[in-house]
Length: 162
Image 1 (cartoon, helix red, strand yellow):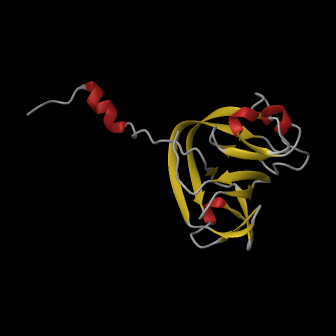
Image 2 (tube, rainbow, N blue to C red):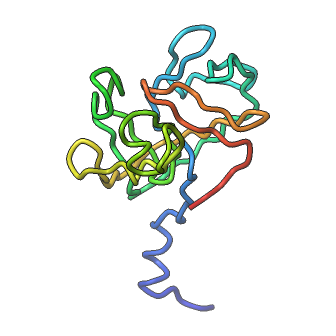
Image 3 (cartoon, rainbow, N blue to C red):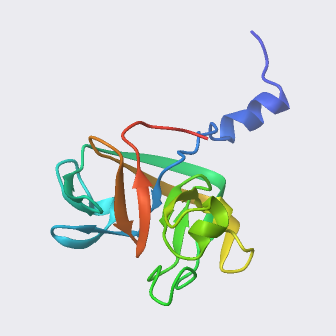
């Protein structure tokens, strides 16, 4: 019978590394739906979510439990005097739809999408490490821009991981 080494014993207590989704919302982030603003964890397949293109049917909700994960915190009112309404925590590659002074500065156009990590200023929009985080990835039939936490966030129809 083989014996377990100290390394083997330690690995038994270590949760397996989970790939971080590139697009996701942290638990508690409110999403605009036809039923009002709801925390993302209460959304279900079939719910009608308000997007830039109108109300769209939610096709899938994937939940990722991440440990010791580095995410981006967008502080309340970091983007505009009204946006976001509360702090929003996102994966670094989550695309954010911007249409203020940042769009021409970052993309050379009036509006467009940029990964939230490109908006970091180290103070109001900053990277933080979280011991645990539940992340919710929303999927629609096609790419949509949803209203979540007072921000405009892109949801792609396919799953992508960092």
